[in-house]
Length: 427
Image (cartoon, rainbow, N blue to C red; front, side, top):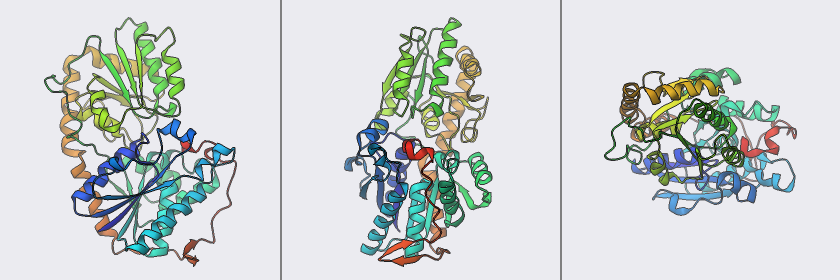
C-alpha cells in the first residue's frame, strides 16, 4: 500500500508523538508499504525552545520513507502577538496531501493526532476518495474541545466522520467517547508499544537492584500536567523523612525552567539533577542510570515512557489515571498512587525502595509483559489490519471543490478567546 502518514510533531521535537511515529514508520516499511511522512514543525524561536523543534532531520527518518516537512506558520503567529491560526495549518496539511495524491495515488491516509492533522486528513479523504485513519492522542481527549466551540466542533467532526479511529487504551477510549458523545465502538484500541531491542535492562545487572543511594528517574515531557512538580515535592518529603536518594529529570517542555529553578532550592539542592533534552536513541542510557521510574502524570492516552522503563528493567511507580491503568496494574507490574498527591506518591516510592522481593517481582512481571504485549511487531500488525479494513471505505461527507481545494460550508466561526490560540504548544 501507499500510505501517507501525517504527524503534528516529529524529531527533533522531543515528544511521545515523535517516538510513536518513528517506530510505526519503520515497521510499515519493513512490512513492504510505500510510506510518505508529512510532518508539521515549529521553526520559530519559541517553538524550538519548547520542543527542541525545527525541520525533521532526514537522518532521523527511517530508510525508505519520503519526508515532506511543513512549518506550522499558523501556529507560529503567536510569535507576532497574534492568536494561533490553526485553520491555516489544517489547510496547508490538506493541500500537501492532495498534491502527493496527484503525483502518485495514495491508498490510505493516516493522521497522528486528531487536530489539526486529523481534520486535515479527513478533508483530504473526502476530497480524494481515499480512506482515512486517525490516531487519537492524549491531547485530543484531555484538552482539544475543552477550550472553545471551534475546536469542540472540529474534533467531534473528526471523531464522527473518519472511517477508522485508533486509540491507545480502553480507559482513554471511554473518556473520549463520553466527553464528545461518540459511540465507543467507533474506536479500535491499539495499545502503545516500545522498541524492546533498543530498550532493555543493563547487561550484568540483576532486575530490581538498587544503587547507593537509590536513583529515581523521570523521563518525558517537562510539563506541569505530567506531574513533574508533584514529583519534586515527593522527593522533598522523602528527604524530610531521612531517606538518601537521587532524582534524575530528563526531557524538555514548557516548564523546564520552572523545574530547574525548583530543583536548586535548598531543600532539594544536591539531590535533583536536571538533564534537559534527551534524544530518543540516547534515552536507553538514561534509563539505565535509574532504579525506579516515577511517572506522576495527571492523564495519558497511553504512556510510551512507562513501557520504555519496563523494557529497561526499572520498577515503575505511576498514578491511577486514564492511559496508565491500562498498562500498569497496581501490585502486579508496578505501583499506582492517586494523581496530584505527592504524599501518596512518596509512600508508594518508599514501599518499593524498602521491599526487595516486591520490587523484583513487579519488575520481572513488567519486563515479561512489555516484551509479549507491547512490542512494535505486535502493534504494527494491528495497525496494518486496520489499513486493510478501511481500503474499501469511502468518505460519506459531501465536500465542494473549488480550485482543487476542499471547501466546507459548515465550518464554525473562529473563537479567538480559545486559550490554546495564545499558547498553542500546550494543545
